[in-house]
Image (tube, rainbow, N blue to C red):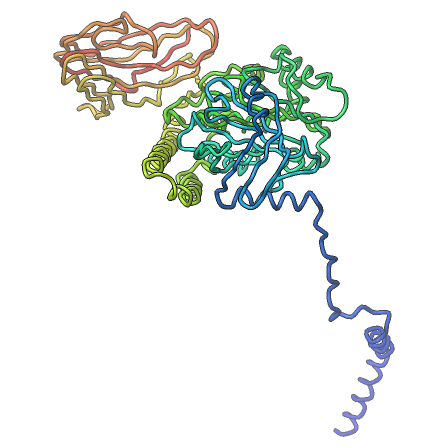
Length: 556
């Protein structure tokens, strides 16, 4: 047994002997200077040297997130007289903000129709700290605006909107509030906005760190068919890029999409227009050709619209999401196939992510808490008035978050006909318009579901409505109606029970007591359009039933 063990041990030593040189080499490699040690300490990164631009950005961030400040603007007598004669001509002023004193600040009166006030009233002012004194800046800013906010008594619209835009990646000026004094006169609470200059371009467009791209001021109700004022840019100011945008917008529909895509950041434009709709910004570029900047980056050579002058927002929580487009670019863009559906999809995406009750409440609560630190030192009537306007804004914003999805439920859908050229019309919503009416859905005794309309008082209008997008053509909408004791009244829209389209009248009439009767409404559309079908009663008393599945549209 012992001999066998000795032989086995010798064999094992023999078998493992070839591995010994490899293990030796491996051990020497691990211990030698030529192999990297696994316990070596990581190299300490070199400290970041703060540049002038980085310091200014940090100061600007702190200014807009920090406490409310008081701007004391002082003019010499001759400068004040100059502003009385020519408010737009800049004059030197001294600006004191706390312990900071800035001299030789360029100041002029700003504003357009509705917001312009004289220098002896409560004027809106543009302050340029480096125009008369090279290199001077305040709180990281070379240029800022003191807005009198006469069209926004809450002083919150600019702040809320700019916060939402920037969260969604759409550059615009930051905003906060301030107290303003002019030659000792207390002007009250103003809104402060950063200016549009090279620093703004550098901060918001990383692809253009030197601010070489053209930045145009849209001015007052001026469109791209005019030579806009260039505020930032390098090279000859010949409006060549603006002319390309005009030409692209004027292309025939077949080639317009590709032409616009080459000169316009269309995805950015879609988000911009979606926010304009969400915010009910009636005075922006898409709806009124006003209050905008237009930037063309020098890398991709494509334009982006920048929202501006956002003091008149959120007035109507029920405002339509497609209110009509008057800007050349918005008008021509939304004429292209599919763009309207893309807009509504983008509105849904943006509102679900950014325009939510929690987000809006947090923005307003944070801003109100900061503003209230200075309002406590104002007169109580002034404080209560501003806070009341803020509460009103909060209510309208929250109502808007409800109205947007409701409008989406009413969104017109493209029609789909069967092989016989027919379709059942769906998407009906109740609309008891006037009087004491009932508009409900019930199950009939024999099973079908039906609209049930009741007039419980004189001059009652009640019905159901269904939005639809129809291409050009000839159509007939029909449905089975039944009435009981229906006492009609007549007006230009129609009489008794019947079918029509929203905004129009009808000649089909049912009244009194009738058994199931087919009612028809023919329509000719020379071009595609959105419309709203209306199945209704106009009566002083009585009721009607409409079989839901019988409401069918036939294409001739």
